[in-house]
Image (cartoon, rainbow, N blue to C red; front, side, top):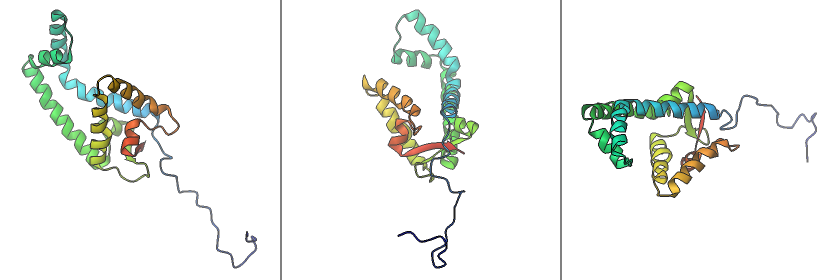
Length: 176
């Protein structure tokens, strides 16, 4: 039974316009792509000199396998080990940013961050283990890993704008 609007004994009614539904401020697909590109670039730069030397070595050998590529990169000596040291520094900075703000360097540049699907803070463990580690393991499955990686990326075009790793970790990416 509806109460008439002139009922003096009815509870008060009010409209609250400033409350947003969790996830209504989602990051754009383009900002997520840009952040992933920046992160990939940052992690590949320390090994760039080793890549150049290793590519030249592999091109002359005629065999291109992952093991041959890593062997050729390690054979560059100081270039490779300086790359490893720089990579560890970058990894430490990214781990600190993820722990502190739930953001990688690319996400920080693009002003986006990872949160739980209900809008609460995503923990470092959830981001590391469920979003990254489990996702990486799934991509390493022979034959199916490449298909999984493709499906994971293409899921961003759904209405929810969530990739498979977002569903696994129960996270969303929002504007920070």
